[in-house]
Amino acid sequence: MNYKKLKEKKDLLNKNKHLLSDGILENYATDFDINFAHSSTAIEGNTLSLKQSKLLIEDKVSVGKKNLREIYEVLNHDKAWKFVKEQVNQGKYLSENLIKEIHRILMDNIEKGGEYRNADLIITGAKFKPPSHFIIKYELENFFHTLKNNELNEIALAAYTHGEFVKIHPFSDGNGRTSRIIMNYQLIKEDFLPININVEKKEEYYDVLEEYAVNDNLNPFIEFISKLEEEQLNFYLKQIKDI
Image 1 (cartoon, rainbow, N blue to C red):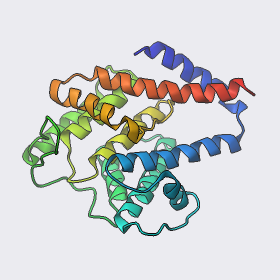
Image 2: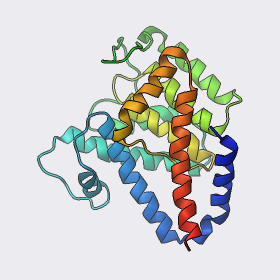
Image 3: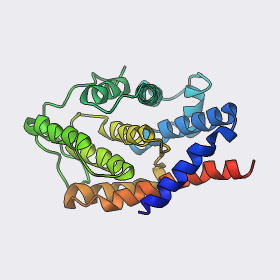
């Protein structure tokens, strides 16, 4: 990862972002929000199309022939992401209470959220097994300690936040969606752009996550995130250049 190049692009964007109108920036943000909600839920098996997700989130129109769980997954994701942006705007750092609230919003009208699992889990198809529920509290203490005490750059910290949290898998459901949201929490808190992992990249995404979970090697996931971040930065910088 060429962190220096990413940081230079980030700084260039933030210096010139004012050249894009508020309407354009709002349009880009809305487009990201819809794609993020669609992709993050689709990775977990949600069958709503991107168009149906747009109808729900932006147009406030219900979609037929879909079960309520899938509808709530998309709507709740959008609510949780909006909540995160509000928290960042208020200058709040990622905390245990915030993560529990994010999960509670994600699980609203689906199942009770914000509570850690009380049983062990097996992740179908994965080469690693999440830690026993008996040591979740200990694992999370280490996790939050590392978030506050580390020498990682912003991209690496976002990767660690996602990778370690989903490795612990503290909730019975919704860990992936929560992890992707808190990864973006770390990025936007440091003035980077949030990233979206399209369902087409699901296999590569799972591979780099598993490399960290099994071999404690975070580098492939850092590279994965870096590429997506650079794509986002390049898009915005191109719009500014074309003005």
